Length: 169
View 1 (cartoon, rainbow, N blue to C red):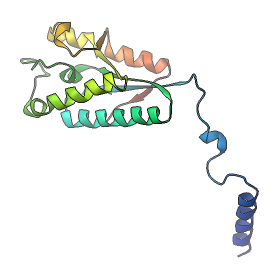
View 2 (view 1 turned 90 degrees about the vertical axis):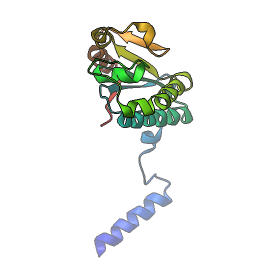
View 3 (view 1 turned 120 degrees about the vertical axis):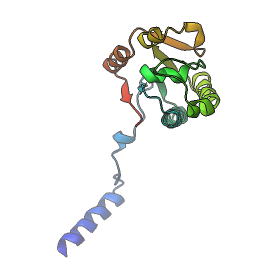
View 4 (view 1 turned 30 degrees about the horizontal axis):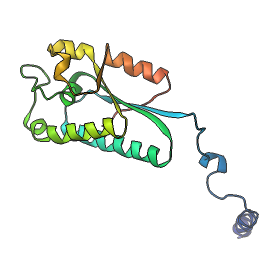
C-alpha cells in the first residue's frame, strides 16, 4: 500500500513540476534541418498484391515525412522478379512473364508509381544484370527509371550510406 502511495506522490510531483511524463523532450525533438531520412525498399518478388502493399507503405512514409517537413530520399531497387513492375512488356518466355493478376493490376500499379515518382520524389532503380538477362532494351521501361549495374550491390552501398533497408513481406 505504501509503495502505491509513494508512486502516486512521485507522479503528482512530476506532473506539478512540469516534468514530462511521456517520452523525453529530446526524443520528440525535430531532426536537424539538414538531416535527410534515407530508405531503400527491395523489390525482388513477383506478387502484385505484395507490391501494391509496398507502394501503399511508401506513399504513407513519404506523406508523413512531407507533413513533418522532413527531407527524405526513398528508393526502390528492383531485382530479379521485381523487373515485372517497371515495364509494360509481358516478358514472355522469361521466368518473369506476366500472369493474369499482374495483367489486371498493371495499369493501377504503374499509375501509382508515376505519382510516387512525380509527386513524392521516390526514385526507382533496376538491376541491369536482370535487364540484360531478359534482353530487354532500356527503352522498354517506365520513364524515370535508373539502371544500376547490380541491384544487390546498390542496396548494400545504400545501406553503407545510411539508408534504412525495408523489404515488405
